[in-house]
Image (cartoon, rainbow, N blue to C red; front, side, top):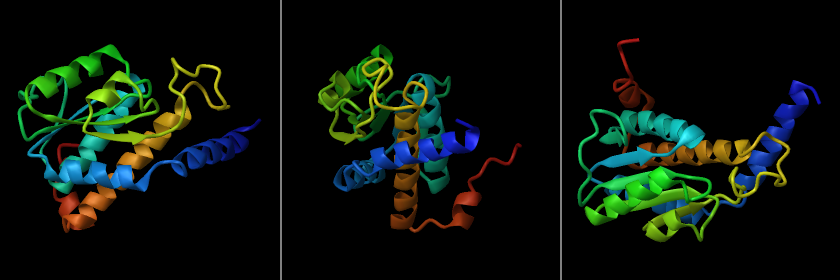
Length: 184
């Protein structure tokens, strides 16, 4: 296939996954994010990069956001939300973060393809995206490399959640732009 055909395949696969995502679960995620005193995000590998991208947008909406593992990340506590993306729901570092956060009284929200995973069992809120994680479904139905469709669907769910949160909290493009980095 050429690149144009691959793009069409990509869009079709991601669209098929997103068509199966529960709107109720996404709305619950938005409520949890809005209710939180502070939001901490985590993920490993490509999921980690997606969570960093979400952190930027959530900060631009006006929320207090921290990326787990950054040198300036404060301790999590009651009233905070730990938002984790993990296809498998079993990646050791995010599972450890969730257990520690639960011990501190924080709430947990997870985006995963494995609703019966350890992370999902620790979470107050779960968004299930039915794409196979790399380790669980290496030879799965996707024609895309590894878990690319799942990862892209996760990013779209988060971008859509940010748009909904911005609308619900009265944010505009201008107010968000006022929080955009200016040291570039």
